[in-house]
Length: 149
Image (tube, rainbow, N blue to C red; front, side):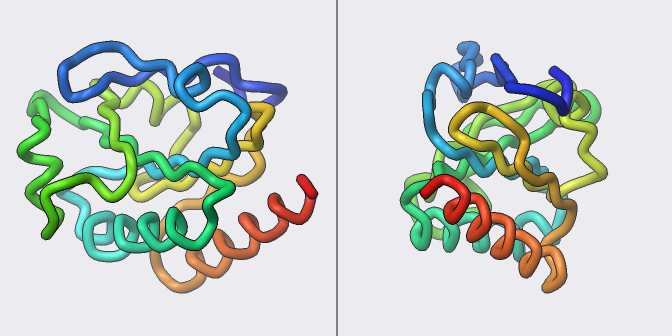
């Protein structure tokens, strides 16, 4: 998977360890991928709530959480759910074991946001969850939606 041209597959797994190709699961959709890890306080404290807000504010964009595992600990659905106060996920979350998808997008760390066009092209990739990163994300989303009108 390169950062040029259209991405043809993003292979992650669901909580049952079944493979999922996000491009096939969400065809012709603008995607906002959030690479995160439960151990990252910036992820759980700022990025996850921000991702939920984006999902509510921009129905034209499908927000997807991708929990990237670093090391030997395997995360479970219970682990993922433990950071939420409600009993259901606010947006789809998938697992990136051995951080292969994270690496393929050349992520700088967690949280890493990757905004993809409905054609599977990388529109923006933004690291972080603090105010500057949040402003850049809002700007990128607004520009993408304007470009697709």
